[in-house]
Amino acid sequence: MLAILYPKNCISDDLQRSSAIRMTTLTFYGGAGEIGGNQILLEDDDTRIWLDFGMPFSRANRYFSEFLQPRKLSGLGDWFEFGLMPDLPGLYREDYISRLREPSDLAFDAVLLTHAHADHSAYIHFLRPDLPIYASEVTKRILEALEVTSTTGFAEFLRLKETFKLVPKSKGEGFKRLQGKEAKRSRKFKVIGSRARIGNIEVEAFPVSHSLPGARAYLLHTSSGTIFYTGDFRFHGRGEEATRETVERVADVEVDAMLCEGTRVRESTDIPEAELERRITSEMRGVKGLVVVNFPPRDIDRMISFLRASEENDRKLVVSLRQAYLLKMLEGSDCGAPKLDDVCVYLPRKNWGLIGDPSYPEEVVAQDYEYWEREFLNLENAVIAEDIRESPRDYVFRCDFFELKNLIDIRPPKGSIYIRSVTEPFDEETEIDKRKADAWLKHFGLYPYSQIHCSGHAGGPELRRTIEDVSPELLIPVHTEAPEAFEEFHQNVKRVKLGQRIEL
Image (tube, rainbow, N blue to C red; front, side, top):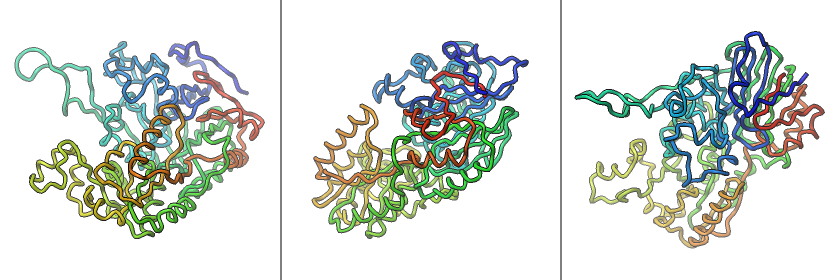
């Protein structure tokens, strides 16, 4: 039987568990009636596990933008003000929460992370370092790459730097701000294999295909039954077999509740990644100028598609420094990412713009770049704007919205094309960005362009088949703006709202 509980204003007092009460509950602080932002709390007797802890993009963008960001000085106050994270004791890092109140003891057992997309993982930055984060090895490597290369200031996923703390001066009287090596702390991060036991909950992890490698779905065996949490998944990527095998294995289990993503529940099945590769290969054929492309920076399936299409057309794929660092981090993993030697790495002009100027010594040129970028400056497969400008027919240049300024240096010649392989705008802010990007492309003769993309999410027909195969007793749609659509797939669907708590 399903009991519905509405915690008063979703505050912490309503979540305190009496030792005499034995129950399994789910509370939805994110991912209910919205795409992404998954923050789902599973409580089983004395065990409390978070299923993801991501950023709710639609709610965050309602109040903040690139130039209107939450203030770090408030600790967590700005996030709590607009309900972007739940105000619960024993969850957040001491240095931040101490700006609001006295810190509490750790009150949770773990975070189960499905993958490293921001709408599932971004708010890990704010969590206590002693709260274990469970994820796949590939997810851990992606988070480390993001942590090193990010410029946001809110990307401390594996290591954090304590702030708002004073320490005695090493010389003389008084205090100074804690900083440097003394401020660094390691986060408790655990790579999950196929199984793990967290408190009294047995967890099984299953690989699924998504537009980011390392994604996992989870079976959670609780005292009240088995819960299947799909995370984000699809059947039309290069790893589609992993998803199919996972569904087959879960179908052999008696699932009491299924938390199913539904990003594209109202859409039909997308084109396969292999078909996308064929289309972009054809689009490049016969192009006399430069091929400029845009695809998600960490979508390894898509990178492989563009790499193969480039090779079929006797061109070299050029990736950004951040993508190069990601490939370096993924070396030796099982995700099938290209090797760094398989691509060219673009060195943009930065700071003083000295790259390619032989009149300056290498150590001075290196000062234009971040420390993590400098290891790529002397690669044999590194290229600069002059290389591409002189031989545009040899390259496929990956260029996203924030890299459009590089076109000023490269100056694509007549006969160049642009292939866009990212999702269409989904809100006012991304629509504005697209209009700006289109203006740049028109200026450089790259408009109109080809839109060739496939999603990282299963469509409605695939979701229906998955739900029929798993055949859960209860179906709970998450990560969707159309939970009502699931009622066409299952006779026992529970639509949940933000802040709602249900008992299994």
